[in-house]
Length: 370
Image 1 (tube, rainbow, N blue to C red):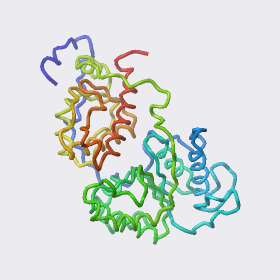
Image 2 (image 1 turned 90 degrees about the horizontal axis):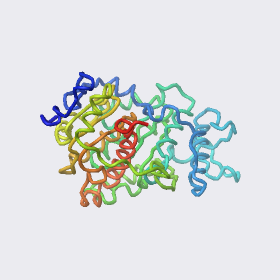
Image 3 (image 1 turned 90 degrees about the vertical axis):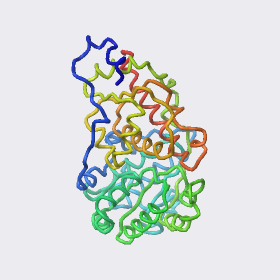
Image 4 (image 1 turned 135 degrees about the vertical axis):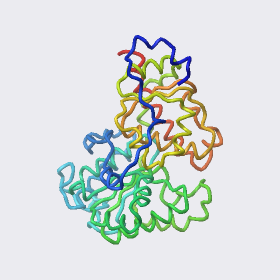
């Protein structure tokens, strides 16, 4: 925090200084990584019944029906009590449902930002008739981090006894990760584990527009064989019928809000970006432990691709944990350059913008009382 900010009339506020993300260097044991492979807090209470399909988008209603059937095929009663069977029965209402275990051992939800894919994936996790220790839910990055922490063979052993593995935001940006996950999923399918995944790209097209896509196209085709694809159309619900996100506040407003909010953090944005380079992305969740709000000053465009991708992971962890983000400087839709937004990682950057905008809206009450 700059000296001018420190002297900006904070004497009337709490004398307890805000927390700082830059001061945190969390160490996360491997067993915590496994235990935390459950739907994030934002999705604790979601169920199929709480997903409200857009009546203009019939694919959303179909998605609920297919995933309900998927849960029933995993050995439990249907989430709606209908008792329908047929693990991947897209045509079951016409008597064309598949028997459980037929065809691919996974379902793949494809759609744009904010159509409720994670809501549906988490609902499937909740509906699956197995204790939490026998089903896992995590992002693609969290899955690769788990392998890094446990080792490949130990990860296979840990997950092979599961009934279901849910993978959110399945996006392959690195050839090494592609081979790793392809091999892992193949082993898990052989062990009888059912798979469910979300992404913004169809399985057979995951490498399009990516760097070095030709190097791992063959691996992607192998992955696509594990999934039956379900398209979900619709607009981003985070902005559907809602007011525009608040414009950035002044540095003084952000600083005062940080001092006035218990367990809020306050960091200079460029310094935070530097700090993220020193912390492994698998620890970004732990980096936010106990925070009620994240306050950032001097938000500016990120300088390079590596920094941008680290920020995407942090944005995901903050969104999962519903931590409001209050900021001064540039608006979040100007974080990434045009080159980045038109490049191979554009889907991740647009997701980050969408999520940070939602969190900025959540932070409005820190400055503007209800």
